[in-house]
Image (cartoon, rainbow, N blue to C red; front, side, top):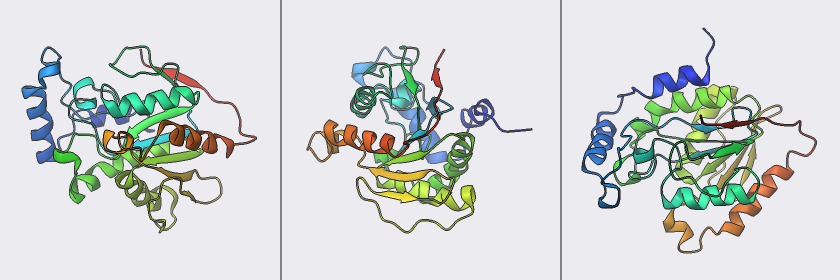
Length: 238
């Protein structure tokens, strides 16, 4: 049977490969944050979301405890999401500048968002084993995104994880380049370019390490690298 986004989603949602992450994501969903006490927390692995024909694929670290672990959609419902989606909207990759909940009308055009690890980790620190357990999901997702021209890793963890996936995806050695904001590494003819950005976490955006202008400029640089590329599709959650 050929793979598909639906098959991948059906495998991700019931995943319980990592006992520590399963226990933590469910604990957070039970205890909740006072601000979201009336919300029905997702408390499960979070699939990717966006345009299946996207040329730009953004890879984050993992769901936030009271963001994606609450809402069930990647980069939704927290301050990182507010920054990221606002920038994607400014650059023309999103139809609206906010991502608050599933079914809020958000549509990505020529962009697809996913994460290196699908369950919220304590202290935002997955273990090497947890990262390895999730790597096949990311590799399959990237393989399904056949129109991808650029993979943008958000932060050092995502950068390393995408580099880990490169050998099984493309049959070439793991890139040796270390993480640096704005770095671009070619993966070979006919393959996407790997780009790096600081993660849009409050730790970076509140301190000015990553500004909206910096991030939009990087998105525009990525788009400019596609000169002469064919058109794209758009996708919206039902």
